Length: 107
Image (tube, rainbow, N blue to C red; front, side, top):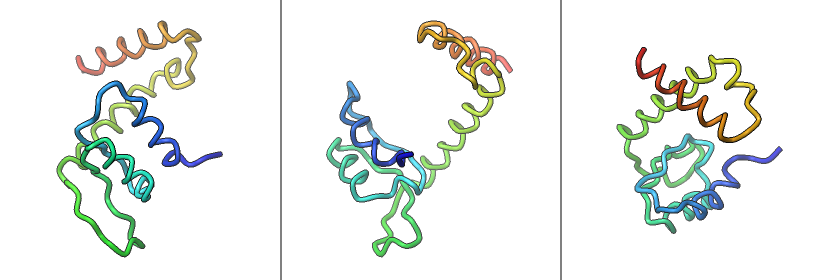
């Protein structure tokens, strides 16, 4: 019962390489997230919330590509075993994800 945006700074710090851009939806438009992205010297592609006084600019074309990733994960979750995490080991789960991604690519 915790907002995802509160964990994002920790996830960014744990990445082995610095990202070029961080693409997220409006829920991640917080000062802490923007500071963490700036600390990684990455571009924040996060649309500002409507109630933010300073409406900053963002790359709308790059943000539109976020939809493609969302739809891809939606197609992966059509497989019941993947969506419910039926595979118990990380190796088997990753193998299933690779198989589903290859099948989606062939579609």
